[in-house]
Image 1 (cartoon, one colour):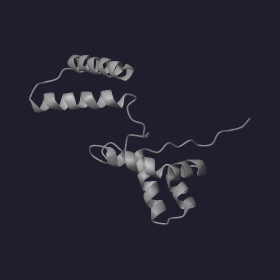
Image 2 (image 1 turned 90 degrees about the horizontal axis):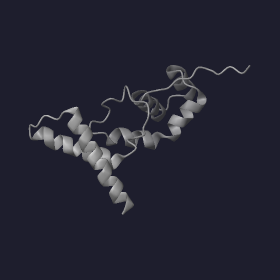
Image 3 (image 1 turned 120 degrees about the vertical axis):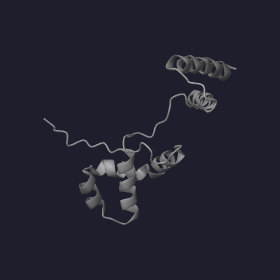
Length: 120
């Protein structure tokens, strides 16, 4: 029976630390031992350096929440997500409380709008 080794998933903050240690010239073996990652995980992080850095820097507050987040994929429907966020910010800045029901209704309206726009 083939046993699978230890499977370690690093969050974005840890991936950033791995990348900084690579930049500092630390040996690959030391980095892999320190973070408890396999060779393939190490080289995946190294290969995806640009994607990881771009994702972290594009956040509203870079590094905020990086200790929890593990993946760099965004929302499936980014346009709808952006529209809802802008709508929410407008309501909050106007001092209007937004309930979850209203937020859900706005999301549905924006989704229908974008679906119609894409079909055109």
